[in-house]
Length: 246
Picture 1 (cartoon, rainbow, N blue to C red):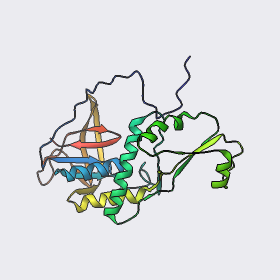
Picture 2: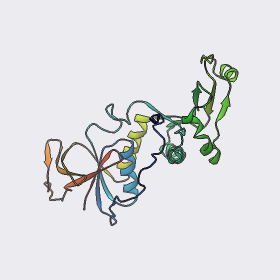
Picture 3: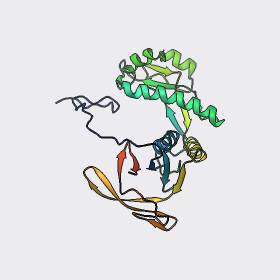
Picture 4: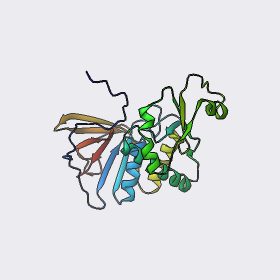
């Protein structure tokens, strides 16, 4: 019986690499609704707006709220994802974008404190398998033996550690504040934000039929009071509900 894969970030093996998912294409000035103003939703809405689309962003509780995975005060940014090079590359790109974004916002959001990985055995695949990617991007980790750990991090009991790796490029991001700032930028750049609850319908052909959503006690269905046509279906992408108007 094969051993279970304890590295949840490892790329899946033996799965089909086919790309049979059809993504829609839109004409300029098309209307798009993004449901969920977390990290994925807010950034998606902002970039869609910058592409020239008319975008409405909807969230039931507000950007960066305590119920969301993008909420709370901080989130660690690190490149260590085992053998998953895609995650490493995404992290490198995300770091560049956050540094660029905080300059435009005029507020520090990313704090380059570094990230230390404590390794109890000679081999730690989650870290070891990321080392080739770190070298590729010239973002190499520092190897620390127990004596070096004690010297640099005296608050850590290194007696039972084999070694540690220090990632000098990682750190933490102010999660709640950053999501709220992205949403504010989206509104400044002409996007529309609604604090509203979306009611999904039945799943049909891997899609969810949209019945209606509520905004300040107003029930939007196929047509609103202004006779603007609203979408009747939306798809799930990356854990974010996005409603596409056709």
